[in-house]
Amino acid sequence: MLLPRLRRFARALARDAHDADDLVQIAVERALTRAAQRRPDAPLSSWMFGIVRNAWLDELRARGRRARVFAPEEAGERIGDTSQGAHADLLAVQDALARLPEEQRAAVALVLIEGLSYKEAAYIMEVPIGTLTSRLARGRETLQEMLGET
Amino acid sequence: MNFSDETLMAYADGELDAASRAALEAAMATDPQLAQRFARHRALRARLRAALDPVLDEPLPERLLASVRGTPEPRRADNVVPLKRKAAPRWSWPQWGAIAASLIGGALLGPLLLRTPAGGAVVTRDGQVLASGALALALSEQLASDQPPGAAVQIGVSFRARNGDYCRTFVLRQKSALAGLACRGHEVWRLEVLAQNPVQPAAAAAYRPAGSALPASVAGRLDELIAGEPLDAGAEAAARAGGWKR
Image (cartoon, rainbow over all chains, first blue to last red; front, top):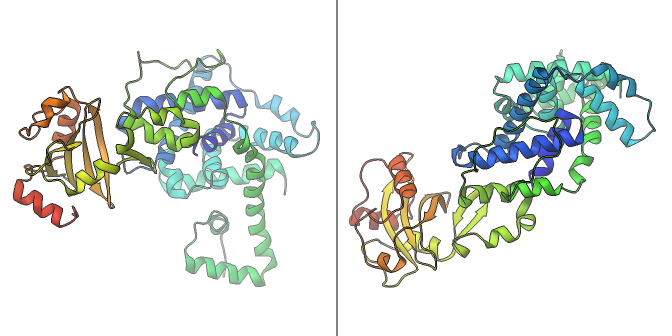
């Protein structure tokens, strides 16, 4: 089943659970109208991840237009102020992800969380593999600084 | 030997070739500092996965299931991108059915699969729609020039696609007549298109000249795919004898 993985990917991108599911829903609706145009040699998963990612880029542009940009400072205050355990760590990780530049966050989400190959991730992000790996390296370094040594 | 941070990351990501992997593993066995540099990358991967993996176990929201089934509900909030809606999504079940099955699995798709127009003649597997049962058999065995009277499947035109695959058009004579086009590859018949046949099933019983009874979507796909001319009776029989292999 691909849908749970699309939800995980969207959650890494959008952080807010409802926003993330909205992204997935938009992606499914777009996929439905474009099913006929899908290149049969492209794996379905890559195709769908790409649609989720593009829906997210559209959302960011729309947020920019509405001047309601997500404020990372507010997120920063939440780090460490909730209870211990898995939920607290989810928040810490998601806050750290949210503070990455978008293209680094997408690279991290596709390779480190979704476990895709560099080739698949580069295909989804429509960039050369070298670009993907440098975004990934920078994203990793920033995350390690923000999250501390684990 | 010196290993760059990029090499260590590639190792953590499963991207090193066997030789580099062996060299790095041997070096890490005797170099604790190197091993520790690598452990950082592995730990970050593990921490991200541990934080996000619980999403996989959450029940799928009904609104997402409804979208996959092609019956979308309005989205929750007003603070998301207003999707520029087309009047109605234009899609056909053979194209979407396989995708939907991959997204949420057959069990959650449930009743929709039963609504598949061709009944048992098509199955979805690995994101593709494949011929099965009587349709698959007819595509493999039946010659257009020698069709059993009253057969459930009537073969139309056979041809080679530009990529070299053999393809055949067909008409399913069921309660609702369906026409389609399937291409052979990897030991299966892959459906390229399946459409309602405007011609009455009874009329399709008589042998018709190739392509004359095909819905526009099937004829259009044929035109896109075909390389050269359709197979004549001799070439069709030879293709069958060769198992429809390229």
